[in-house]
Length: 291
Image 1: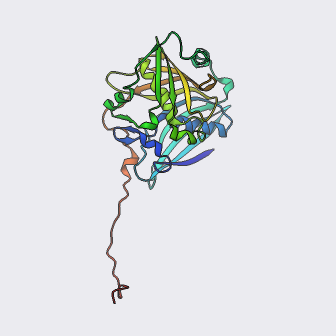
Image 2: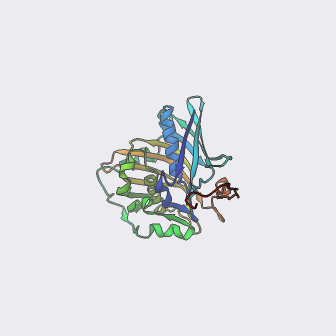
Image 3: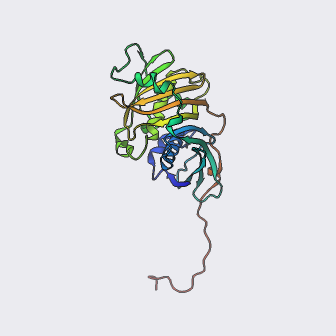
C-alpha cells in the first residue's frame, strides 16, 4: 500500500517553528504521526519500531512530496517514509519502521507506573518542582530553535529518574489538533521533559533516533500530563494522559543521539534551485498603445 501527501510551510505553517541550524526540519514526532496514521489504514494500532534515518528539510519556498510505503509481513507491516522536494527527481528514505497489532505489545513503564502517576493526584506529592523558564534557551546554544508552537512545556516536577510535566498546544493550534492522532508539535514538547531526566548532554543537544512500542490511545489532545522515565543512558519511556488522567499515548522506549556536528540536514533538498531565466524574444509589429 502506498500513501502519498505533500508538506510545505504554506500548508503547514507551524513547521516553521522547528529549526535546526537555521533550516526548517520536519520533527521526528511528525514521522511518528505519519506512521501511526498509516497503521490506521491497515488495521495496526501499534508502532512497534520507528528508526529515523535522515532529516527532512522543508524548503522555505515550495514543498516536499511524501510517500509512506507499507509492505505486509506476516501479521504486521513494514513502513518506509520517503520524501522528494518539488521539482526534484531523487527520493530520500527518512524513516523505517514496523507496524503491528496491540496484542503483541510489551508491557513497560508507560503501561503501569507511568499512567498510575498521571491519575487524579496531581501534581505528584513527592516530586520537586523544577525551573523550566530557560528550557527553550538551552537548545539555541546548539542551533536548535523552537518557535511558539513548539514551546508547549509549561511545568515540570522531578524525582530521581522520573519527570512529570504539563504540556499544552498553543490555543491558535487547537482547531487543528483534531486533524492529527496527536499534533507533532504537542508530542515534540512532551519529549522536552526528558531534558530534566538527565539525558541532555553538556556538549550537544539530543535528538530522537528510535521510537519503540508507540500506542496512540486517544486523538485530538491539546493539553496533557506527562510522565517520562529514564530507562537507560540515552533512553526513556513516556506516558501521556489528558487532564483527567485518561491515557492518550504511550512510548515504551525512545532512544536519542547527539546532534551531528557540522552542517546539518544537507541533502537532495539543497540541490534543487528554482530560479528565473530570461530569453531574448523578437517582436514584430507595433506595441499596443504606442501608435
